[in-house]
Length: 244
Image (cartoon, rainbow, N blue to C red; front, side, top):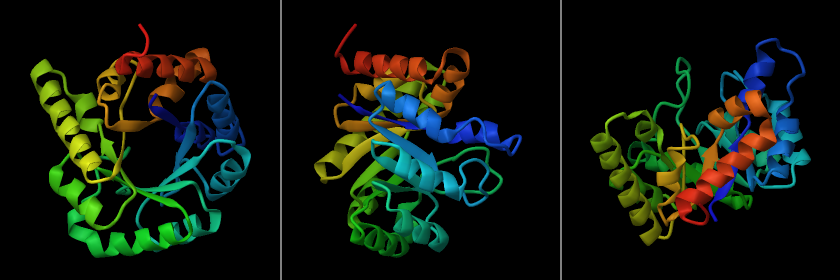
């Protein structure tokens, strides 16, 4: 079974629209756990547009499953991660003007810097992951800097419309996942996944963890967090061929 880490960032997005105390990302995380999520993901952005520093501390202490902390590769974020000590740190690129993460890290162009960050993270017993596009060069660079895992960006795959383009992008993801696995990297995936498009990603045998947030939070508005997580787990199992 692929692990599902539920990202609760956009629960905080709703809260921050009024800068109040509800809805609570921690409560959403606990409901996701209750429904079967094996971990929680949060992205502390430099602009603090949704998750806040205190959320990281509260969620880290309040959940019973592992916490995956997504963050930009900056000294401020590294210092915070070393203080809070999540289960895993996932480095992602950030642009202040972007609506959401637009692509993977260019590991190739900053190997020395990312390697130094990785050493600090691993030195505290924290797993070190990199969010990258499905590209052989980025996979190889991730291995060179001694990352524990990669998370393959599925964003482009989820945005394509023609069957031919979708299949071509899926093949890129498959090849990257296989290459990473052969090099000893653990393979995760995420970005833009929903009940339907997740199935083809879940069918890739090397992928062992999915990070899914926006769609689950959106569905939770209609039917509740537990129902949304349960349905996502069902779709993942269908993709893996574990149930009809």
